[in-house]
Image (cartoon, rainbow, N blue to C red):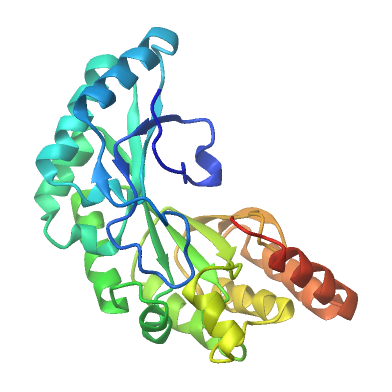
Amino acid sequence: MHYNSPIVRPQTDANDLFIELTVGCTHNSCTFCNFYDGYPFRVADWKQIEEDLQEAAAVYPHTTKVWATGGNPFALSVDNLKRFADLTKEYLPEARIGTYARVNDLYHKSAEEIHILHEAGYDNIVLGIESADDDVLSHVKKGYTAEDILRECKKLEEAGMPYRIIYLGGLAGAGNGEESARRTAAVLNQLHPYYMFLTTVAILPGTKLHQEMLDGTFKEETELERLKEFRRLIQDMKNPIGVFSATSTDVLAFTAHFPEDKDKVLKKFDKAISTFSAEDEAYFNARRHAMRSV
């Protein structure tokens, strides 16, 4: 197997078969991210891709889940994405494909084309929207707006493509988390992702956001503020969705499905918030600041 850059995948997809489709990220400009520093975006060699699929088929011929690795492989053309799906089906006929996409990867793909890709084998697109608050999206240089998120996710839904999203708490900065969560919920209430990853930013050395923090132009949220931000998001969200919030940066770990588990989860947050101590703040803050990657 060949891997030429870090493998970044959702926590829930750890047992997938990883096949390198791209290296790096087309954008690589988000101020909080260092995942792909030093790895310019490129498509993996097709000979390498086929060799990896052949190797995997010899060992795990009944693989059902393939994760196409790279920062955002869905940036590839419809033809290239279909080529990968066809190769996967040739060697692993039982497998379905998941991968990352940026919102702007969808701009030049029609709903009909996305439907064709779904029929070809893609059924697990993960969008790291991070937020649907335009102030946050602009500040961290995501490269799209809340309107773009709404339009392109509706396109996925029209195409019948199942998708998941990532919400990255803490990006709004001190004093702004709950309002940012409210704005994001207002957008998500118009959409129907089937799953959401709730995680919260660790400001990593070497990133632009870390430099802003050192310069005093960005003040990070406290750990307590992060809890309140998540509570606001959960409280305001209305549509059915699965939620995973058990990453290395989360203060309160849980998995749930809303609306069935919503009241129970909100009570957990209320208890955590009401009992959160100065010692808790110091512990979780120190743990976060010790991270060099997530």
